[in-house]
Length: 261
Image (cartoon, rainbow, N blue to C red; front, side, top):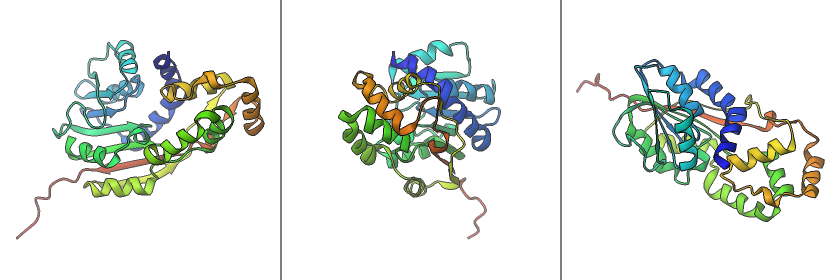
């Protein structure tokens, strides 16, 4: 099933990069209230819940019911973690200035209306709260090769969709963020996130599960796999150097009280 496949790929691929981002840039504190927007099967939500401790709490939100149900089953014993269905336009606590941190890992490029997403996040943070975003802002070369050689039927549709909906380059994301009232603390590219697949089968499973099944494995033939291998080499595949992520930390400013008339 796609949800189980995503959970496994999340543990093997996304968990390490997400934890590294949390440790280096997000820095949650005990007692924090955190929204994990696009939590998937909840591995990073559970990690955040551990970091904020019993005095804090984490709300994980995802639109995919199957992923969410799997998250609830896997992490049912974590008392300070709640998992609810929602998306960037409709999530628990939206507009209530409830959260210290809103966290998005590999999610922003799936959101069509980024301006509205930032508006909703701004109204949901406490003063001084922050958004912490790690995402992909362009089609990586190994992904372009996979589309070219493994999925030619959907190549053009995916590329057009990515250009028009999913991917917005870092500078434009920063501009949208600032337009909605945030103060940007840090914005940069990170290329130290490990992406290694031991076999073509593992890589294909990751493509299928992480794309909500868009990459239909029924389209892949042995001939196509061999063409793909002729371009990228034989497994194990190490795409770490191409696996560049955009990172953004931005703060909702506190209302100034030191202004004199």
